[in-house]
Image 1 (cartoon, one colour):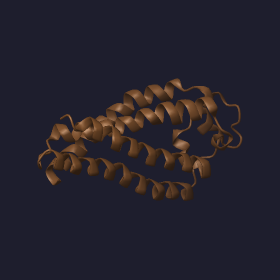
Image 2 (tube, rainbow, N blue to C red):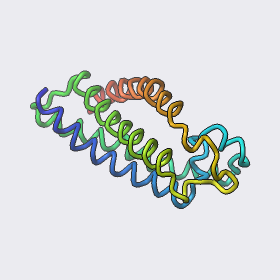
Image 3 (tube, one colour):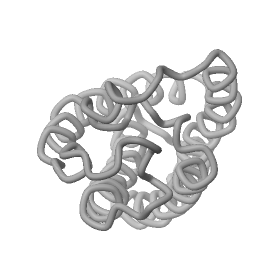
Image 4 (cartoon, rainbow, N blue to C red):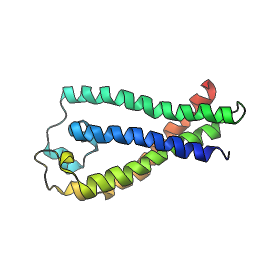
Length: 168
């Protein structure tokens, strides 16, 4: 089990870098694709996403989901090799959850609280929503991510770990 933590940190950092770079790119070039993640008052002040924006969001989500699954799977393959061909369910779930949790904490602290709610660069502000209170109210977002988000990570990790131990 001693080999799990370095793998979680290393591959979790890779996962975090890839997904965070993609998210910042999406926010920079097409912030409306992330409209569902904006504060409620901001969402209420702008038109709903168009069908084209929804399609674009799906097309962008597919490679992001592939990365989000491929990096932990790679970790599990390496861990299995390091443990003489053995990969237990608990090794898998701890690895997957650890890597996802690392990304989740980075996303919350750096991307959400610091970049979105504290700094709020102009490219994040949707036209017509300048100065809205939601851009500075990070508490509901943090609570949702820490409670609901962490529970969701646990469920996803459990399912992926089960699949991985059966397939790998």
